[in-house]
Image (cartoon, rainbow, N blue to C red; front, side):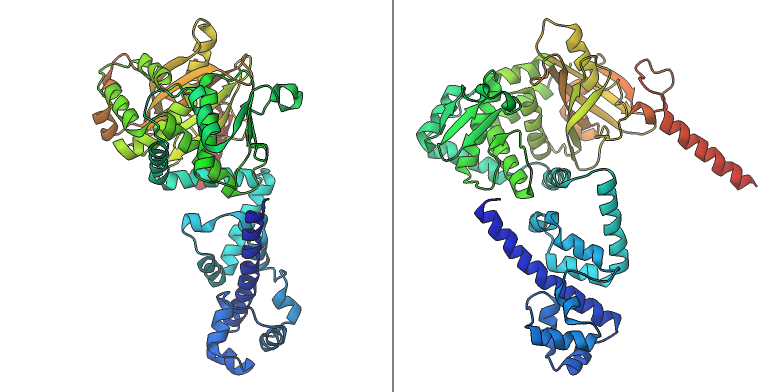
Amino acid sequence: MDHTQYQLVMQKDSKIIKLILGFKLRHLRLSQDLSYQELATKTGLSTSYLNDIEKGKRYPKPDKTTIIANALGVDYNYMVSTNASKKLQPIIDLLTSKFFKLFPLEEFGISLEKLIELFTQTPDRVNAFISTIFKIARNYQVGEEQFYMEALRSYQDMFNNYFPELEEAVALFKKEYSIKGTVPFTGGFLEDQLLEIYGIKVDRKTLKKHSNLKSIRSYLNKDKKVLYLKKGLSEAQENFLLARELGFQYLKITERPYETTIINIDSFEKLLNNYKASHFAAALLMEEKELVKDIKTISRENTWQPNLFLDLLSKYNVTEEMLLQRLTNILPHHFGLEDLFFIRLTGSEDLSSFQMTKDLHLSQLHSPYNNELSEHYCNRWVSITSIKELRISKKVSVIADAQISKYWNTDKEYLCISLAKPSFQSPQKGASVTLGLLVTPQLKSIFNFISDPALKIREVHTTCERCGISNCEARVASPVILEQEEIDQALIQSLGEL
């Protein structure tokens, strides 16, 4: 935790301490059915002073706290401590938790004071709710990092994953340093910008000397002004890391990770700032107006043309993940396609199992979604079939594929575009990134190739364990959860007949 973050936490600590005392005061006053005037009469303190205490605006001196405590029938220590009654303790625990201190409620438009007021009005129900959340988090080993990751996804969803201030920052950066919109940017050019503008050198030799740093792709030593890059990265991968560092520097971000991938996500601010720099990098490498023109060109095609997506990788010299992630910025804002998801899958060496390592959902929780219950993802997904196709076709380094996925027992259909290639960390494994777009009249009016009769249409589901598709050639596990639900329904029906 740096000095700036420490100061913010200390300020929030002080505010929370005030709010906890005010929270206790308000709860005790209301539970005893006392008005401000009645409590003022009992304590000799003004109603405005008591009101300010309840709202966390003032913190009474010890003598006045003692007077208030005596009037409410509790002792001084109860009022000033972080301990409370059984009804209130879960709320106090939440307010004093590390997660709550570091989570920027303001980014989500939530006032801490209003939250406390809500807690006070219905403490029993809020208590039960918070206790449930804590128990779920403990039982499923959900740590702070998972909370922060989910919060970031919700933040992206809240703004349709489009941030005009970051797009504008890229435009100002290019204007300020007379950078023309030439596509693609080369690693050498970006490296020169880092050195000339910010005095940061690039070192590609040092990381490989440390065997325990194999998982680290980049690391910035801010004191030496050296950006260490892992040897063996593709130029597209380097471009992202170089452009992201330009983003960190130009946006003057201090609360940030210095390594890729982030080792310790200890605050939401760090994770959010990492996203901002990454968004900056994507906007720099794939200029907004130019990419919109490219999408319009693709959309006019009457047939599915996988090479057009592969051409975009070459045109902008970016990775598969960067391209599809960038589309999650562009499609909602410029084309009105807000119902979409992005997922990244990695297959095991024998392709018997697949792990979802990233997912983003805009507008609603779409299918497919990340399942942490060790269930088997549907092998009819194009995300998985593209990885399998990559294994069979050893002559190509990237597979581009698409299909219409109709979800079993629902009215939902998605146009899914998938790009698969060998995993960077483990080349013997396959990995894919997929962009899913909910099929709507709006989507059909934009992408002509969605009516291509050659485009695959498959009935799919989320996991085999929950799927009732009969005679599925791709099934890898029995529908045990669905079967148990049917048994339970039969029991309920039989009981109803008694």
